[in-house]
Length: 478
Image (tube, rainbow, N blue to C red):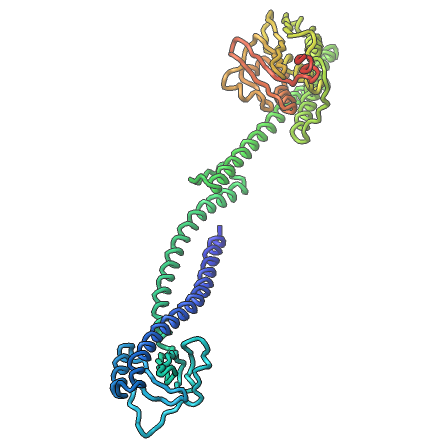
């Protein structure tokens, strides 16, 4: 089997993983950057507020010198990683810069400086009114003296530094994601193999069965759906193999059962034609030919009956009838045969009248076949017992003989087409081997059961069930 399904699993996983990685990375990067920027702004604002409330406030209250404040700001800037710290008055004039010493006679003014544009927030991002060449995070903290904003402490931090911190954090996260991806890929490959290997076995078995190799054996050691599928497929192959074997046996048996009488008929006719059989003996041998023809006709009819039962199903004409009356009629039809073999038929009927609901003609055929079998395999001066018993909503019919019996190993096969046990072959020269198969199909069509109890040399008993008529059930309840 081509590994297309296997590759599809892996390709789908890889595409999903890559797409998911890109989406997650983009989302996480945005969240991480925003969180770091906010945290950085908060920490810078705390420092700016501290400067505004201490050193810078002392400067405007004339309690310290500009040089002293500058020194403090340089120290704080170094502590913050070199972030520039400015003091800017409301007009935009730069009063103090931690990164350099301002010239006294030169005014550094930030053109367009307007701290009110940031609104209620305390920081802004950008080039700070075109002061920087790169995007910068700037934090404002007002310096108040005499109840008036005298200036602003402004701390700057390049956005590139914040992004670098975010990149460092995300690189670790990406590395962990890649490791997790590789681990999950290994696990996926492992579990995919667990699914693929049984599937490959099943596919190979299917290919073998498709070319007719029903003897191919395989096993899937699992109790999940795959194991159930494998077991079902193996069972199906076994059933097909059994049916093919039955079909071969059927054809062989049909060929044999047709060839034997046809050979006899042809032989007798040729013998009569060429004078081997004299004219005065023609009537005798024509009688044999007629018997063989009747046997072929019976075989053909039974084959057609059985084939119709199996292919089209059986159409039952159910009605309420007296099973005891049917048994009496069948027994009477064998009266002449029983006299010839000195066999007595004993009827043990539970009641005078026992109504059942079934197809009367089909049940009559069942009884006829069973009684016919019983007579064939019974000894002279023996008896056949036909009995009916009632139990709950069922009527059980038993046909019991005291004949040759059926070997134990043959009992489960007697309902197969054309089956004849070794013991029966010498006793039943004219039998077709289809009678019990027809019996089984008729009883099965009524959704009832038939069982056999037999002991070699003692006899055989067939028991089948029929549903009681509803009128009988009503009478029993009354």
